[in-house]
Image (cartoon, rainbow, N blue to C red; front, side, top):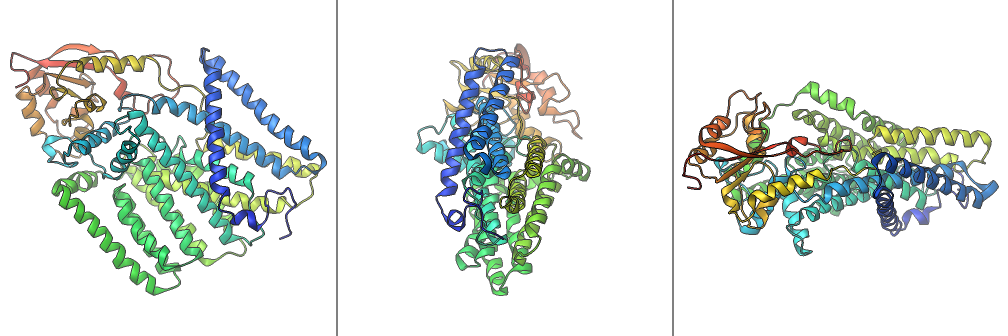
Length: 601
């Protein structure tokens, strides 16, 4: 390969080996994205939605044209089509990031924790941590979570040291911190793949780093496979753990050292505390060491070491929470059957990530490459296939999010390889037309990968009225005597650990894995002075869903022991597309109070 031109996007080996470039570029991209979000906010202020979107589009078009014109005016006859294309795509990616930050600010700053089903349980666990209440208790209490405690523990710890341990917006902001970190580790993976697949002369410069970090952050937050990444859920931290484990694998490929092997031994047990499915890394690493490892001895070290660490981790959990831990985190989830047809549907929905990873891998692995890098690519393929299959237990595609980010790594690695020869050619009319066509294809691909969003605030003003109406029901009352079906922010002030929540009941109702006698007894004894539930008169009442094989009896118990005393209207207003991922939790609330005079006993 010939030496790159002085202003080429491949600047030489010193640029690739400098450790400062990735963090500096990442910080610069984040600052530019946040500044763009502020600009959108300024444009949209006090304007009708359609006018705001139109003005934003015009400003974005002007920015894109200005960036291209500035480069061409500066380089003139020496301007290169590849660099112009990179400038366009990088600017486009940063503008799309600005739209994402603008939109997600509406979710992050929303003061209540019911944007999606696990948020209330996530916050309930944080209340438990602050009071010393067990994270996992007997199932009849209906106050535990089906996910492992790592995300709740780490998020609360980081928020607590900053003085915001009980701030819902702050807790959501921590999920974005994990996501930005995931994209940064993915950028490091991209650099390592290039080093493993090319000679030292190919050294991506700052423009490549800027494009890849911005694009990988868009992948990490894409609307198809990562729709809940900003919510109080384990997705953001699970994605960070996954991409970190993959980075450890690539480090091992480059330099099979004892230190790299030791870190690989820790990946599965650490991942287990974040999401149960991350135990798969024990099997993936073992498969890699068996098929592509350079020493059978390292496999014989890895297997007992990681198995022991996983057993110790599970033993500690059992010591802390007993059999209840395994009931909630293994038995309940284990009863969810996988629908192969639904998994196949998810494969079709996420086809751009399969295609991107496959095509990127083909480009990277053609010609001379190390055999071990082929193994790393096949490990990604096994991971995304597994995540797609297991996503068939539910309708959402968030199970595929971590592998989608790794697909983005391979896609942009392949794109970098493809652009390397073009960077060394003399510019001509044909080269400019080709670069323009490829750039247009990639820009269109951004839409197919879920990067493009409408620059509107997602949550209408009436949603805040809805929150205030709920809070008014708790004003001056003992929160432990009021049951809200979903959402725990109203219990933070009094540090109440509330059970009998709708997500807990709904999680176990369909699979018939729950014992609801405790809640039925509390309803019969009129334990609660007030009960606030959504969908009481609809078939999809979460406490007694119409598709369950057997009724829970909760709807009937409520009718016999409580009476309706009021309603909180559903949130209304001009809504941006997908303004709430689960609008059920913004639906009408029925207020119930005990019949007779035995309330609160």
